[in-house]
Length: 189
Image 1 (tube, helix red, strand yellow):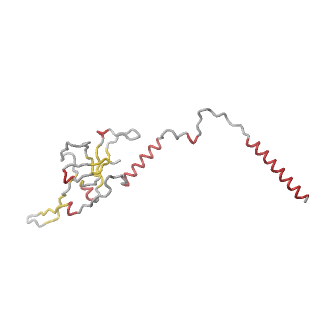
Image 2 (cartoon, helix red, strand yellow; image 1 turned 45 degrees about the horizontal axis):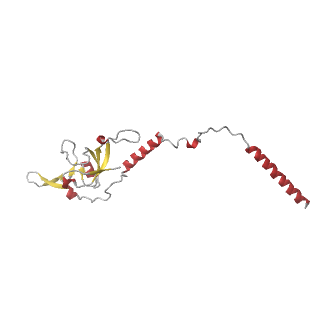
Image 3 (cartoon, rainbow, N blue to C red; image 1 turned 90 degrees about the horizontal axis):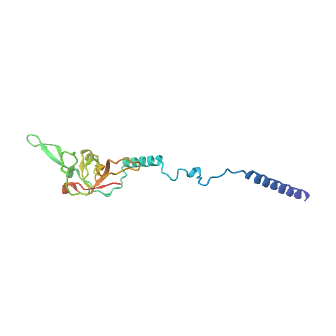
């Protein structure tokens, strides 16, 4: 019984000594804090850094490479090969049938087409980027409904967040050019 009492007193003494040591160790002198001081972890929060702009532009380039555009026409009717190409008979007796002629609207360059007058923006086509009907039609420059084309937007005066002028932008064709005789497209964001 006496041993228990001594043990309890000893434990209480150790606790009080530990509390006094903690109270003395916690009382360190703090440096004077200025009125407009900001913690180190909040220094970069207010202004946009070059690293953020760079990472955004890298993300944009990755999206373009992956083909993840937000297109206005997600579902496009596939075009059959018979509808896209017409068989040309050649040779003296017209028996050879190995030549094909494209029956759809195609992009061939600035020298061959006449500019239309009625439009919101009359932009020059730079290239055909992706035809939803396949890589063959993309390489031939065939323009059908849903085709992604690159247009020259330097006249619009668009600027990137970094301050560079945007020269080319992607657009998706919204009409059937072979029926209308002109190409209507929506600029992609």
